[in-house]
Amino acid sequence: MVSDWRPFVYGGLASIAAEFGTFPIDTTKTRLQVQGQVSDAKFKEIKYKGMTHALLRISKEEGIRALYSGIKPALLRQATYGTIKIGIYYSLKSIVIKNPHDETLFKNVLCGITAGVIGSSIANPTDVLKVRLQAEKEAYAEKGMLRCFLDIYKNEGVKGLWRGVCPTAQRAAVCAGVELPVYDITKRNLILSGTIEDGVFNHFVSSFTAGLAGAVTSTPIDVVRTRLMNQRKLRTALVDGARVQVLYTGSFHCAIHTVQTEGLLALYKGFVPTWVRLGPWNIIFFIMYEQMKRLY
Image (tube, rainbow, N blue to C red):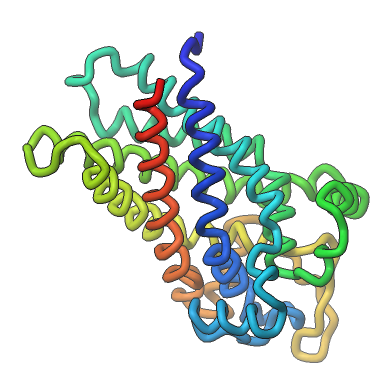
C-alpha cells in the first residue's frame, strides 16, 4: 500500500511547471512531425524548415498565442500523467528497493516502464486534444476544452479519445524507462564518485543527461504517436489522382508507411525541438522536484 503522498503531489506540480515553461517548443515539434505526409494533402506541404523557422513563422502568421495552443489539455495531462507517473515510480522503487545499495539500472527501468504505461494510458484523451490543438489551431481554438472533448467523442467515439494510446504508452514506457532511471543512476554515481555533491548542479547535469537519452530513444515513437492522434476517422485524400482512405491502421503500419514514403529520417522529424524541449523540461522538473522534497 502506498503511504507516502509526496511523490504524487510533487511530481504533478513539477510536471505542470516544466510543461508550461517548454510548451512553445513542443508546439513546433508537433508541427514539424505532422508536415510532409505524402498521403494527406492537408499536411503534405513542408511549411517549416526547422525549429527556429517554425517558431518565427507560427508567431508571425498566427500570433504568439498560437505557440500555446493546446496548453490547457497539456497542463491537465501533466496534472494526471505527471502525478501518476512520478508517484508510481518512486512508490514502486521504495517497495522493490529496500536498501539503497541494492539499486540497479534494471530495477529502475522496470519501475519507470510500469509508471509510464499506467500514467500515459489514463491521460491519453488530454494528449489527443493537445495534439489536435497544436496541429490545427483554427479548427479548435475558438471552442472550449470541454467542447473539443465532446466533439471528438461525438464524431469519433471513445476510441477517438484513446486514439494512439498504444504508441503513447510505448513512448511513455521508453521515456519513463530511460529518463527516470538515467537521472537516478547519473545522480547517484556522481555523488558516490565524489565528482559532484548532491545539489542543484548535480541535479542539472543528471537531468540534462536524462533529457538527451530520452530524446534519442523516444523520437521515432513520438512521430508515430503524433500522426496517429492527428488523423481523423474515415478521412480520404487524393493520391495519384485517386481518392483513397489514408488512415493508418496502427503503430507498425504508420511507421512502415512513413519510412516508405518519406524515408527513414522521417522518424526523427522534430528531433531537435524534442531534445531542446526535453533538456529544459527535465531540468525544470527535477530541480523543482528535488527542492520540494526538501520542504517536507
